[in-house]
Image (cartoon, rainbow, N blue to C red; front, side, top):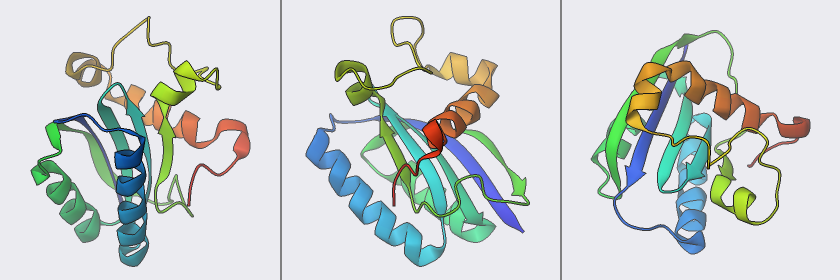
Length: 146
């Protein structure tokens, strides 16, 4: 049975474009080797990620991320068994919402001036996080990443 885990965390130090690219490259390689798929959103220092795969592998990765000194305020929004992967084929799909907001790119689902992705918002409505991941993952039906 497959397992899904969705978490959020805050950066403990600023991430620039090169840092994000390095994180993506190493994570995609590791995820493809362990059979993990998922989607990562980055917005104003907040990471939101869905991980899917064998329960043991997903939990091991989530534990490693929670211990990573680059992350703080690690919070699990949901975790449960799933029948089908939501992000099949993506070792890690990715959207940088800061870039979308500043470059005139499509940002139909998040209005940064209207709300902040806070722990209070997530704890009060954890399904919102999964909805955001799914919406960005399916923008115009195009693959989000390798």
